[in-house]
Length: 168
Image (cartoon, rainbow, N blue to C red):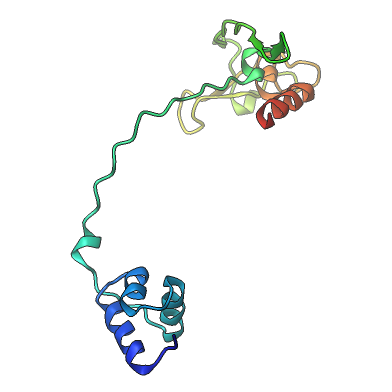
């Protein structure tokens, strides 16, 4: 169908009344929702009346509880790689215990106290008075101590293995 003056006027009225493009298309008949949207755009119609139904939020449908999947980070928890047992089964190695790294008071340092041989791992909120850097002995020319290097850097082989398991 073509757009004649009568249909354009009806389109304008329905649009300002707040009907959706789908509703207007079914009201006019013989055209699609996209045809209505295109014509509204070409006509430059923008103002729409607010309908009470659109002002009131609709109640959401309750969702079934989603099952969360825990993903471990090998760089933080040690080697948790999956080792194939058979061609169809995978055996998961037990996760090692996490050891919380507590930085001794005498080792902590401020930004002004940092040097090349002190760990530069920031701890806490930089805006707070309790903020400090680890200050431990750096490992092999890295900016962090051995513990914080394990957190910051992940070996290339572990990253490749992780990508393969994600892609499946």
